[in-house]
Amino acid sequence: MTDVLIAGSGPTGLTLACDLARRGVGVRVLERRPAPHRESRGKTLHPSSLDVFGQLGVAERMTDIGTEGLVFRKYFDGAHVNDTAYDEALFVGQWQVEEVLRDRLAELGVHVEYGARIAGITEDAAGVTVEPADGRPIRAAYLAGCDGGRSTTRKLLGIPFEGSTEEAELMVLGDVTAAGLSREFWHQWFTSDGGVMLLCPIPGTETFQLQASRELDERGEPLPPSLESFQRLFDRHARVPGIRLAEPTWLSAWRVNVRMATRIREGRTFLAGDAAHVHPIAGGLGMNTGIQDAAALGRTLAAALSGPAGEDVLDAYEAERLPVAAELLADTSRRMDQVLAAVREPGNGVEAGLG
Image (tube, rainbow, N blue to C red):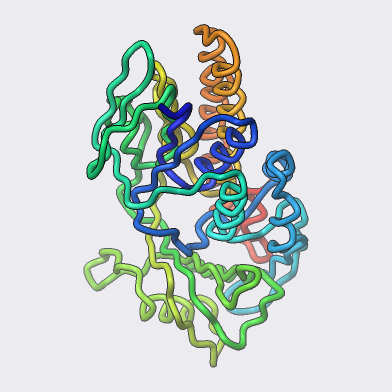
């Protein structure tokens, strides 16, 4: 029987795995994907996350890869308005963060087990039994569900995920190249008709992360994200001739979700990261909050495994992090409203939601 079984190998799950493994705790990590992804997704690390990574021995690896002091270049109706330097975060693609953490985990003797989808969870007084969809049951003293907003762990436990989801998609996202466009800036184009096109350089690559207003068809329905749609949106909002977007490696759409689990502990099973809470992207708090969840859960599980696992020890994680999640949802919703209002005026950009 392993000490802790972790479902999900995103930043939350990998941070937790590294933290526990460095303490000598037996860990296994299951990931339903067949292999690691290379999607930029969350792209900022805050100082609090780097503090956690310092304890894991990987903070310098992150700073070596990432960009500090990125300049936000803002345009309105095609005209350059101003530049704003932002040095309160390290910009780095999520896949790069995960790669560093996987390497550190491998140094600690643990490797992610891919293609492992959880199909069942049962608990008794001595531990948790997890049934993979294809494989033998796994026994663990504790289970950590770090498996994202659509968490299988949360669903199998029947934990409500309360809140709201906007029906309409707010934006499209993707990773693309844009030959000829300066990589010294996070380019942010806004238009007087409400259009948005953002291109943020992912360090150490030729890729930009694209975020843009959704494109509608003749019936007013959103078109699915595609390279052709991205190019039309770029031409409409950025108005920079000669730039051709290419090599899409991630295509996605995003809608506002404001939800949190009603509880993040169920006996010997715990939820962390997006499995516990999802929220607006303003402020870049998602990946960072998941990392803080992992640090708190690591402390809780290490304490339970090294001494009497009383209910007060096990309840410490939920008591600490559930109020944080509630405030996170309220805070990011306020930040999102601030950004949407601010960018209607020339010279404002996403920094309106970062303060």
